[in-house]
Length: 370
Ligand SMILES: [Zn+2]
Image (cartoon, rainbow, N blue to C red; front, side, top):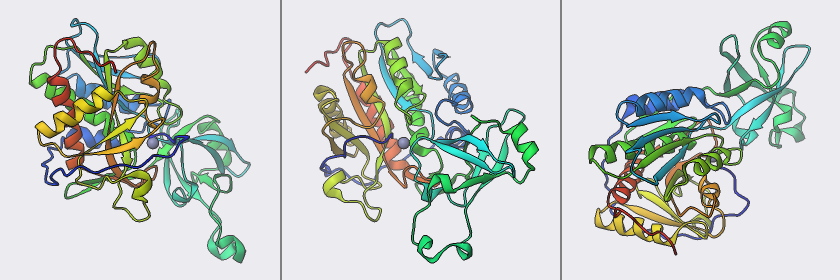
């Protein structure tokens, strides 16, 4: 999810059942999460995703911008697209000083507080380098500074190498991502980059279900590039595909975590299923269709209100050409934009099942107009 210029509005939880059984394709999900793919530099994650897609999709391809596509029934007319962005937030090197300390800029919306003490994988041309994010020790701080938050410009990356080697191997413009292993506990998965690799996972797993069910429609799963810096990949992809309709998957705020005001963001706790955005930018017919489908199949869901923008790729897709009818399906997530994001696979499964059921039951030609 990218930062939006408008706050989310009030939301209402459904009375859906809390028990839902996930099927986790960990052999796909784990490498997808571990692959380094910051905005604009998604190639490694794209490789994992497209190799998995090639095991069943009728056509797998990419564009020069970094979007990756997996398609069913390529000759069956205008497509329905399922889009989840592939990029993760990262850092970009802006300067290397005489001692070899590296300054960086945000590639996406980091809170500098969560970066302190982390390790960074720099995607250097001669091979990856690990660096630590340094900060002045508490002992050396003025008493007043101890109370203050860190700013990115006061932090630095340290590879442990001498300045000469750093300058050669890490030129300005080198990008990096947080280095953190994946772990699972019960139904929960903790990782960097869950925002929004989990969405890229959802769209491909939904496509796999549709393939298994033999749906005749043209459906394209899109792992989009550069969402975190402005949903640029979505703009390119949706123009190219000219879809009949789109479902966009991203993460949203899980609301049992401390400090969340449900009056502002609504209720979407772990285990509550798929979260559906109601927005001026989403299609009322698609939202209603998703709700009806969820009820019929007993798939748990919640609703959240985004009066203007949704803060997802849908904001670009909906404004493509003459306008594309969109639905936004979100996975509740804790610790968004941190090295340790957390989701519950029951909610992930609800998103997959709901999207597959909605697409699978669309009539041959459907009218999504208001
Ligand atoms: Zn995000």
